[in-house]
Picture 1 (cartoon, one colour):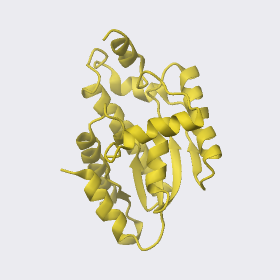
Picture 2 (cartoon, one colour):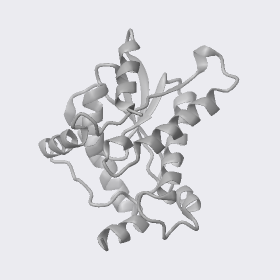
Picture 3 (cartoon, one colour):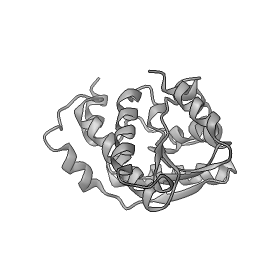
Picture 4 (cartoon, rainbow, N blue to C red):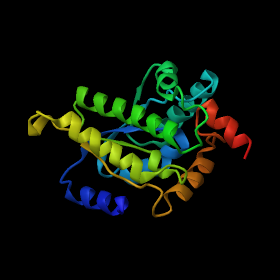
Length: 207
């Protein structure tokens, strides 16, 4: 399924700007995504990444995200979350030796998407989404299926006006990943060399 085409079809339906809570894994990944969506949405970036370790790395990436938002000049809001590494450790238990991109990562995607969806409902956004699909190392099909499942689950028994929509995406399409690298260079953003958790870090370093 071409999720990029599906997203374009969804964007074409919008008559005015909607409010989206956009989970961002890091500043560099958010760059090309924001460029793609800024004309369609009032964007609030959600920084919820309990997988990132150690905490110094987490803070460094968060600060780069905040810096990009400020320096871009776009009217982007920022929603921070407490460092919630224990929640990640809980869902990763027993999966520490999984290969990168496997079951541990899928649980991590879901943890972050669920938090985004719940906050989007609580704070009355129209859409929720994630920058994760801009990465060539992330499975867009898995991420989009999770988002749509959450949309269905959380909208159950809600009136039409209270429902939240998940923005399907495959932001790596149309040179999205390449653009994110170019924009990261333009703004001098720190680009990490591992996804976030220390389990993945050790495996990436040993490739």
